[in-house]
Structures are given as structure tokens and as C-alpha cells.
Length: 441
Ligand SMILES: Nc1nc2c(ncn2[C@@H]2O[C@H](COP(=O)(O)OP(=O)(O)OP(=O)(O)O)[C@@H](O)[C@H]2O)c(=O)[nH]1
Ligand SMILES: [Mg+2]
Image (cartoon, rainbow, N blue to C red; front, side, top):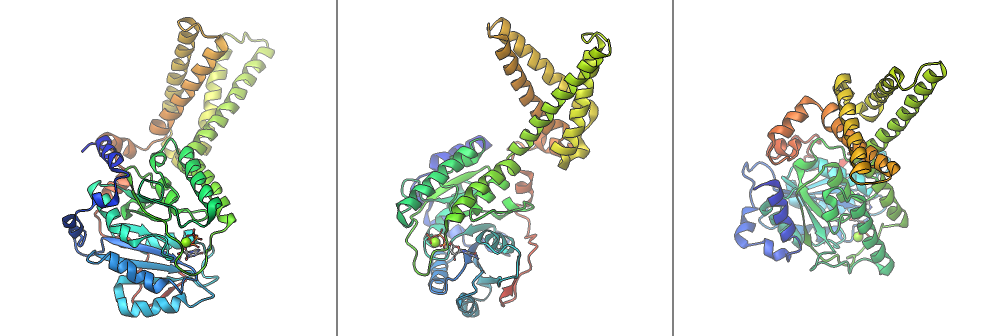
């Protein structure tokens, strides 16, 4: 199936009642992974002061996944109740199926829900990882449906959605939280409108499932609570779908959600936009271009002041020196992470090509299109700049290896996801041997 057809099918099926993904025979196929050596799914559950809920919840998850090869990884940051003792007792009964990571106060630099989930993801061995809360607000019964959706649609990411037909956010406390939640989901989709995230109805869901290989080699650095967005954006997930679910009332214990967490979502959005989408790189490129305009004009005026005719050889010298200036800055600042790939002659050729296109567009708009000269010129500059950026990013500052992958991968799927999907676990976090691990990161 082609990449587009695959995403089209996922889009068509999105919003279907969860049960329509599931047929008994398909569910049975979930019980084993072909190589038999690792679970099909690792369920990552962060906890903080959930002594009252965690025991029944763990049993509820295991019941929901009856017959599915699974493991549960609970990452606990409690320090004023006995959640960890409850977990230890559970582990005596369940053995390998329950992994407990305890992070006492002071054991890690940044002890938050976000880092707890990342710790759980890194400890996971399953083909898929599912992340969910421990307070009963996310229904474990939906996990098999998510697994089927992931397998049938070959999706990289299956989000639980409160906002698809069939889903509900009824358990969110109060009207204001409901409005804030909807508003933040909308802002997120708009902010990432240039990426597949725009199609996700609930991009900030705390309940989601993804192929573990998707985050192999991807550095996850969540700001605040919204790990689903961190995974979606940093992994550049392409094949996405969602399954509706009802966000229930908290079963027991108390909420740790605060206004500060809500504000952190906005900070997280900004950080992701600037660092993970290329927007920050483009802004730097534009700034460098602006300094280049200054260099060009300065040299031209300087040579004119020295008595040369600016419209003969000085105009070429000024342009070339400005290109050299831009090249140096772009190489050492804008594309500093890929600076070893940039070649001066290729950079020059790209600048020349983009200038020719910009001039042609300006001329076409001003003559055939009868546009005002300033408008035609601005349009030419905008197109030339976009083209120049694209060539620099995709060709001039791209490694030969990346270029050959683009040529040979018909689906255009991420080489990381392709190569590691069925590789045995390269998990850097050692497995615990039946005891609670303390202070793991
Ligand atoms: N490990 C860890 N887990 C946390 C931390 N803060 C919250 N959690 C867990 O993360 C999950 C979500 O926290 P909740 O307080 O339920 O937040 P919420 O679901 O957005 O808010 P409510 O709707 O009010 O329950 C729960 O399982 C918490 O126990 C933390 O700092 N560390
Ligand atoms: Mg909750």
C-alpha cells in the first residue's frame, strides 16, 4: 500500500466506533509476538500518591489485556503515602509482568510526570508502548482496540481521543477545565498545522499508544505533562489514527493537575515549534539573510564612496561577499549540527538558482501580471527565499546518506522506524530483577 493510501485509509477509519476495529480473531493475533521473546505491549503508568487506586487499577489493566503478551511499568514518584509498598506487594504476585521504578525525592534532577513517562518508555520492551494514568480516568479496556487499530492500519501512533464521536471528556473537573482542554487542543493543531498533528483531534491526550521503534534514538525532553505531543512531534510520526474513549471521573485519591501545568503546555508548544519543526532554523536563516542584505549594501556604498562605479564590477563583488558572509553564518549557526556537509560551491549554486527564480517571478508579475513593482519584488523575494531554504536544508546541508535514503525509500518512511521495527530490544535501561528500582531516570 502506498504511503498516501495508507494514511487515507487511516483517515477514513478514524472515528469509527472502537469496536469496528476489533474482531475476535484479530484480537487473538495480539497474544503473541512472532519472535516470542518480548511483550507485544508495555503499559507505562506514572503514579504519585495513588495508594488508594493502584492495586485495583493494575488488576483492571491485566483483565483488559487477558491473553495479550504484556508488561506493566509503573514509575512512581510518591513520597507521602505507601504507593510503593502496595506496588511491591503486587510485584510479589505478578513477577515479571509488573516492573516498578521508584524515584524517591532528590534521586533525579527533574522529578515530574513528564520525566516519569520517559523513564517508563525507556524501560519498555514491548513492540508497542501504551501510556495511561493510574486513577481510572483512562479505560484499559480500550487498549486492545488501540492495538488492533495500530496493527490493522499499520499506524505508528494511536491516540485515545475524548473529542471523536463516541468519546467524551465528561470526567474533566468543571466547565473551565473542559474549555481549557478543548482550547489547548485547538491551539496545538493550529500550531502544528504543517505536520500530521493537525489531524489529531486530541493531541494532548494522556492516553496513547505507539510503536516503540518510533522513539528509538529520539531524545524526549518534555516540558510539563504533555508527553503525547512530545512523542508525536519529536518522532515525526507519520501514520496516525485515534480511537474514541470516555475520560472518566477520577476513581479516588487527589488531582495533581495545576494551573501551572496548563501554562507549561504553551511553553512546551513553543519549544517544540522552535526546536523540532524547523521553524527555529528557518527564523535563523531569515535573520542571517537580513544581515547579508546589510553586508551587501554596506560594501556597495563603500565602493561607491571610494569613487568606483557601483553598477559595474562592485555590484558583483558585493553580492558574492554577501553570499560568503551568509554561507559562513548559515554553516556555523543555522545548520551547525550538519555543518560538515555544507560545500561552498554548492551553496553558491543554490543561491544563484534561487536568485534567478526570484528575478523571473518578479519580472513575470510586473509585466504579464501588471503588479506594482514593490509587490512583484516582495513576492519574488519570498519565493526565492523559500526555495533557497528548501535546497539548503534538503541538499546542501544534507548528508549523502540522507540523500540516498530519500532516493531508495518509496514510502518515504523514517529510516529509523523502518530499520528498528523488528530488531530485538536495544533498550538502554536494564531490567529490574523482581525488586523495586530506585532513582532510575
Ligand atoms: N510519576 C509521577 N506521576 C505523576 C506525577 N504527577 C501526576 N502523576 C500521575 O499522573 C497521572 C495524572 O495525574 P492526575 O493528577 O490524575 O492529573 P489529571 O488526570 O490531569 O487530573 P484530574 O482529572 O484532576 O485527575 C496520575 O496517574 C498521577 O498519579 C509525578 O510528578 N510523577
Ligand atoms: Mg487524573
